[in-house]
Amino acid sequence: MSTTTVAKPQTPAVPPVVHTAAMLWLAAVAFGAFEAVLMIGKLLHEGTPVLDLLPQAGFRLAVFAGAIFLALKLKGGANWARWTLAGTLGVFGTLSLVMEPIQYLLAGGSITGAMAGADAMTWAFAASRALHVLAVLGGVALMFQPRANAYFRSA
View (cartoon, rainbow, N blue to C red):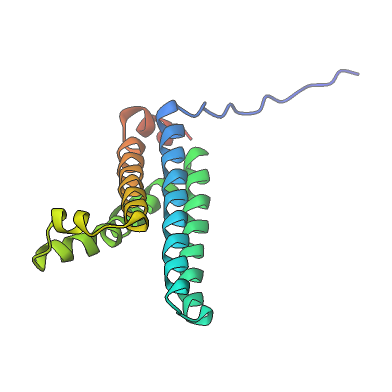
């Protein structure tokens, strides 16, 4: 009696560009979580009741969990995850990250004025926000590189 083994279909190796895109998305989540902690800490310090912060914190937690899920699916070759990340967090998420600074500048604020009055918390938040935006833009750009496109077609 002989045993026959059935060959499993080979899953394509994750190209470095897709791995890096997924890591950038996870970094974006980490920066977003850091910003949320800074913001919540500041609001608590200013006397905002904890219950008033729960809806916003809950929403952010759901977005972070969704982004982590999508980044992991992206790395696994799920094309739908790539498009979902690009459309939701790549477009609308980026807009939400840059809207406040743009409105500040349009209202007559200046970068030098903002920098002059910045404390350590403001600098930490601004640095995190800048890295957050760069991680999102880098993740989106890498998800659509030719090697990534080939990977998603073959997965």
